[in-house]
Image (tube, rainbow, N blue to C red; front, top):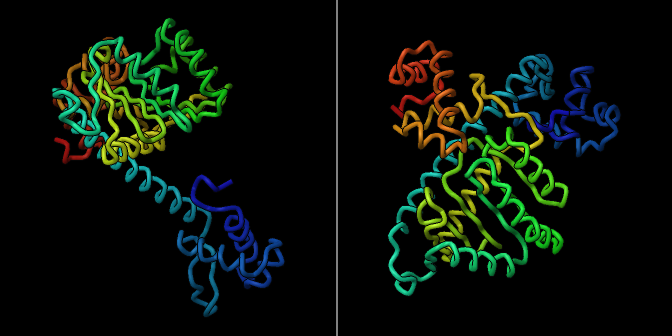
Amino acid sequence: MLTALGLNTVAETVYRAMLMHPQDGVADLAAAVGHTEGEVRDALDTLSELSLVRPSAENAGRLRPVSPEIGMEILMARQQAELAAQQQRLEASRAAAAQLISEYTDLRPAADHPGVEQLVGLDEIRDRLSSLTRDVTDEVMTFAPDGPQTAENMAASRPLNEQLLGRGIRMRTLYLDSVRTNRPTVEHANWLTEHGAQVRTVPSLPTRLIITDRSTALIPVNSDNSAAGAVVLTGAGMLTALCALFETAWATAQPLGDEIPVDRHGLTGQQAAVIRLLAEGHTDETIAKRLGVSHRTARRIASELMERAGARSRFELGVRCVQNGWLPATRC
């Protein structure tokens, strides 16, 4: 029941037993919860690390549980700190990926760049992608940052996806949160899930990305026009960074069937992304593309944030965001 807050089943059972019988020692607790004394001691170590038990001031050598009110506050604060740290890692990975992508925007012939293959035009991209998916043996990881998918693209990809999943290939795809309001895309994602794939969503993604078997990655040269050209990367260092970027984004994403969570300020990930992008100086057009929404929706979100913050201009919105803790002051 409390596993989401960092407690395993045994530790939770021992904590509940201690709340009911705070004077019990290890032997009594073991008898009460039906575990060995060794398991109870391991659980007490876990509870101590989480600050859910503390040494008794009255009985030397005994531990007493903290109250559930204090205990749950400690666990939630700990989880909030872990989420904040994870978000920082995601931002760092995004920055590293953006730098990596920019370095290969104007590639010379592939022969001059070991581990890099340049593709020009949609036909070359499709041919190379077909060979990559044909040869995959274990896993495909994908960033799909274009928002709601077109009916043509979904129909075209279904036979290949079905073939891969039928071969037991693990498929994980990250869409933007904006697809949740697009019924055809949701139905396609549900179809993927029913056939064994995993689908999650995030507020924003840095670029389109396909990684096969953690050994090959395909990235567009121009994120604004993915059909113009792409690069195939096979260098170990580059793949390590891109796989880390995917895993960090995946860890913070939400399964499609789950409700979009809000942070401690009541902001959704999409709203927080708009604040971050505005602070970085992006236009409504760029923000709309990054979130996979229309320009009107991007403006609406910004207007709602201004109204919520009591700001009359976007500059004032930035100030209010820092004052309210919605945006770290170092970003300004």
